[in-house]
Image (tube, rainbow, N blue to C red; front, top):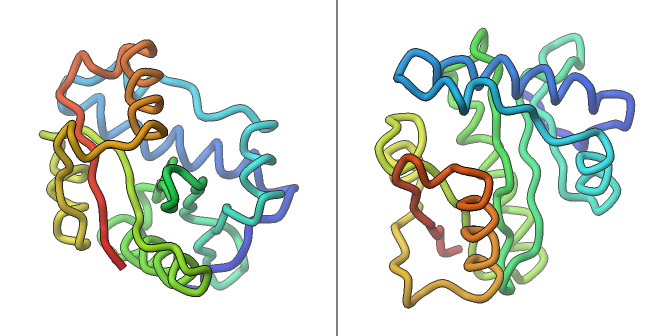
Length: 168
């Protein structure tokens, strides 16, 4: 699977990937997450124009997964990583995370961070297998605290959430 920067004309495809990937939450009683709209095109464009949006593409060069990130507390924070369900269980998400890690190392960034659902198998347990560890509240910088507050305001704390870090 080839990973490359996202093109502007592919941003709607990223939204489609996010919608499709979100449907699996419906099966575990998290319909509200499945129904949550993906980021607007303008926000996706901000990640793309900042050089922090990558797509994993199929042989026809069509995105099947993507990752967007931002700088938070001196680290690279995974804002979203989504794999279309038709491409699941092929280590594409891990490849995107490893790509971000290599980008971070090249830029002298010490770690990757993310926030995720604690009890969803393809969330915190998956990220732990990808080298992330749980952070407790005393380890959160102001940027991660702000992200968690925004998530709570959006209603995501209806289910247990955690912050995680992968040292590089």
